[in-house]
Image (cartoon, rainbow, N blue to C red; front, side, top):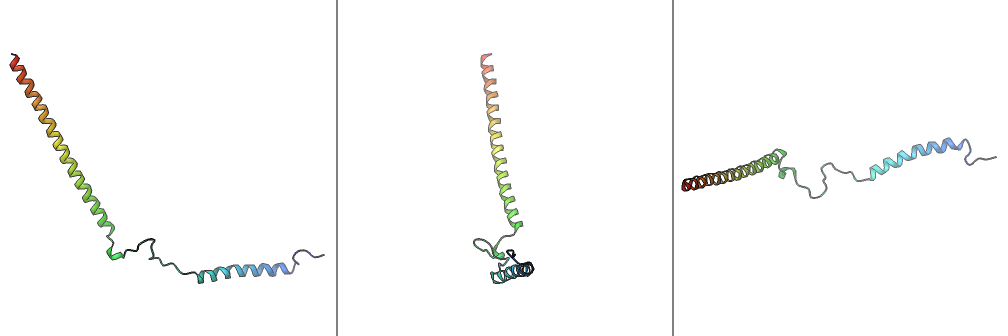
Length: 101
């Protein structure tokens, strides 16, 4: 009676599989083109021409400061306008009250 694989042949086949799979894997790694760490997706910009992170932060802070200055100026202008309206209203109320007396 013979089984699908004779008992003595099974360890031999197992040993071949155990040795062949890593060998195929190593050969595939050796044949594959190595990927360099300096390769980037898209257009590559040389490191010398790229601004540093501190420069980006400085530019961002400059823009934020300009925005704050504009906002402060707009608030000052709006406050001044409202104060003038209140003074004008008080003056008109005062003049009207004086005319009625």
